[in-house]
Length: 261
Image (cartoon, rainbow, N blue to C red; front, side, top):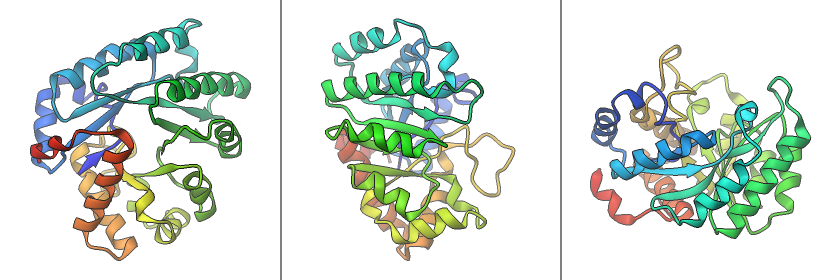
């Protein structure tokens, strides 16, 4: 299995990364992608990925952390990417979030466009975050037809999913689908193609059903795969194989990482 979105640079994982990597591998994970949220975290996600073979990383500026971003961050991001850092597989986590206090939509759109421009320049996919801003995000993406990536934490309708898929984006499928009350998302998943899906935990956030109130863990990715297989009427092995292939293709992951299973 491949967890395409895990914040391994946050507790509890950052307290003992080797222990948590070992647990994840024992649970059947072959690769974990660690997106960053602010410029000062780029070195830590890079160091984690360099030190632990199953880990890969992405560098970006998350809209929820807008107040932490500095004027020179985009120039710093360009300089960082220009070094072709090993195991950097995407730009992200970036996107739009109009639910936060003092959201400043235009400022968010501007910084997102700059990150998409860099993704296009360096031919990297993007990991997109979006809350209450899908119309705006889709409009921005129309200006970047060559940029592909993942819509993180998909929790929308069939129509929303198709809008991203037709722009060349995969849908990040996480713990939301493990909740029976998430009817809209679960019904959409039934009708959307497995060829456009990847698995993710968003650990330590976005807990799966039955583990509310606890930090989420990469090892619970299997529960998401099982929920997805139930919705798609497929066996779990087929779901894991398909989503892993999708992730490897999008993020250009090394095939030999499968040896860590």
